[in-house]
Image (cartoon, rainbow, N blue to C red; front, side):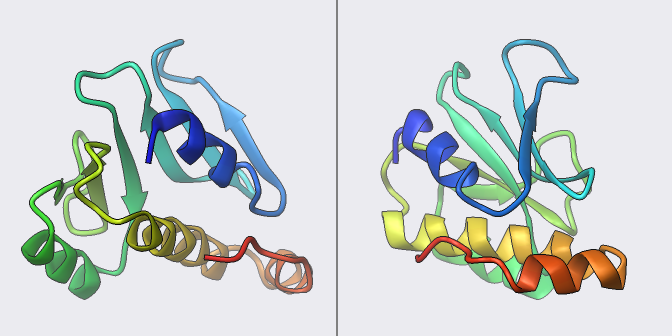
Length: 123
């Protein structure tokens, strides 16, 4: 997936905000004030970092060469995915959805309930 398409997909998740707290070259996507994706569209190569269950994170790193421990992040809970088209689009969308869900599950109950009632993008 190209970075523009990743960005558009990230913004389809309910109550997602896009910020640039680290500077104009990095887009941070949050839900409930918590990060679930960090997109470096102008990096060479472009990449996206996503929150992930630790066991799944290890599996994804084993399966895809483009998936590595989170760059400048907690390497247990974050993966960085190089956007070189080696990871199938459906798999990347699953990773994004999983990241969003990981963050939503850690939000206060009232917000979790409200978000679960909203439509999430299809994978």
